[in-house]
Image (cartoon, rainbow, N blue to C red; front, side, top):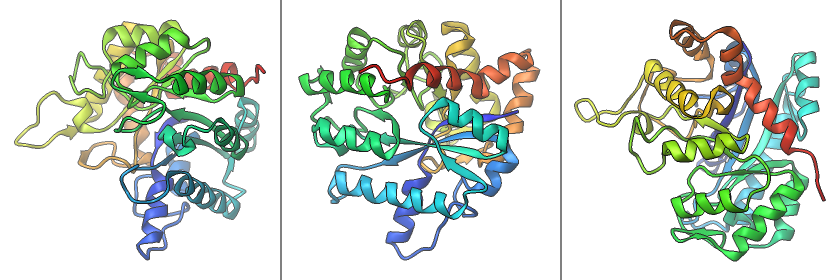
Length: 316
């Protein structure tokens, strides 16, 4: 079974490890995602997020550029195993050649500093998905909604073929995306609020709105976003609970809106899906739940391929 994962923080993990004197690489590391385990896990595609915390003291734009350089340097080291992609056709070509595809995303829209020229620069670097915010208000979105600049960015993102990512977006801003978006959008790593009421999760209405636009929701493996209450103070991440969220989202918005968004290397805790090589556990759990092969393929990778085929067309 192929796997397409909408979100991991591995590039940032490697970047900060090196800043602290480490020598982490993409081939084999002590994180949750590396090439050796991706190959064992059957990966077709991994979205690699460039994550920037606006309060870490670094210039957001420069920090993002340095992380992109780290990813591209790693990809250059292993061209027979993984290649950067910017189109759906490149993903399919890599699949035929037995190569994993790497797609670049941004997790914090403020790395552009509100400048559409920088957005276009990141597009030229290969960015094809971007969140408007992380955990802080910025020039694109606040608790009150998208700003005028955020609306302009949404329009330009759609023109370029950058998928708007509504994970981490405040509720009012989410509904602004629904109002103004003309193309499918994604929630790269979010779960169902009906099963876990964390503010990062999506209500049933949000799920249906994403589905009605042809979008995809990547189910997150983080225990805090899976479980309503901890057990003895611990939020466990069990395969069965990940499947619960997949089932709820599929029942609410249809099988076509569900994908995978592990959040690997951005999450910790007690994870049954402890790294990217363990995806067979989830495949077998969905089989037990009565999912047929075609439905599991939809969740694991086909829905992501569909939205990319639709979204990566430039509509200047």
